[in-house]
Length: 315
Ligand code: NAP
Image (cartoon, rainbow, N blue to C red; front, side, top):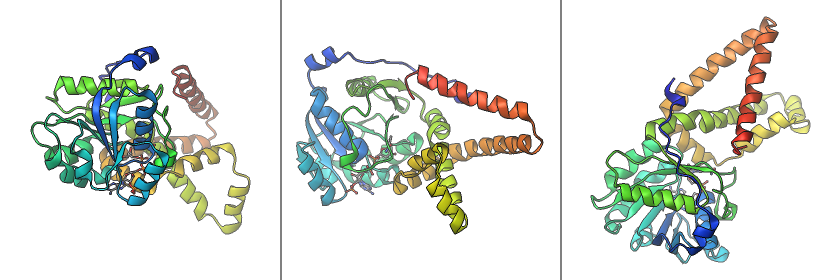
């Protein structure tokens, strides 16, 4: 299986003392969408001081922009995306991935020559498919995906060190300007992230197993519990053990964001789901026939994976 043979290029951390002396990487960064991820970038820019001289925020609603003003996390707020990008040398799409095509279409004609357009979306082949056709020739697309987040949404949910010690994956299409890629690597390093560059299709297969399938399972198990007879459902809630509680935390995520992720990573997600379904059938058979060794082996493998995550400081 090709999934575990990625072409990763580890770029590494940047030291905090280097940060404080470095000049801002961009003059103006425009955030199109400022929820959990966008507001975390805005806060990182404020706290670190070396990402951008100026941050412009855009959201779909004026209610969100009013909240951003109250929080004081952006220098300027613009309700029209084309106004937000007019002076930007870096534009970051931070909306649900299903909105990328319409956002790219509206900002495309207003982008500054030489600007870098990037995004934080969780599906990368669809990001390239939806954004690239709307960009002028003299603009660089460097798609990205910070592998950091929580189940909360909106500008109040963000925090400046969300990306600290976490991976950001960049998936530039073939032929992307190397200087633009280098600049986005540096941007994420200055956010505290570790960076690697990956093929977009490979990215989508990796996140299907490490993120999208676990969410699908969490939404499904909560649905199954909710379908139980009234009396049993009450007991599920009252006596929820840590296993079920952990699923409910994941299942509390934003419905629109996850709808868009599932629909835009359909092939990889269905492939991983098919493999998983086969494995659950094998486990069901082991339980039915009392195959204790099989069950024990699976639990051992789970423990090994947990320990490996702890060792990599990604737990
Ligand atoms: P969020 O908190 O829900 O914020 C979404 C932002 O996008 C809001 O400012 C919203 O504006 C705006 N928006 C929503 N729909 C829009 C539309 N149709 N057109 C234009 N703007 C729209 O979302 P998030 O959690 O930051 O996620 C943003 C992106 O990051 C997604 O693509 C997601 O896949 C990716 N991502 C998320 C996580 C995570 O854990 N949350 C982790 C990694 C990557 P209003 O508030 O005005 O509606």
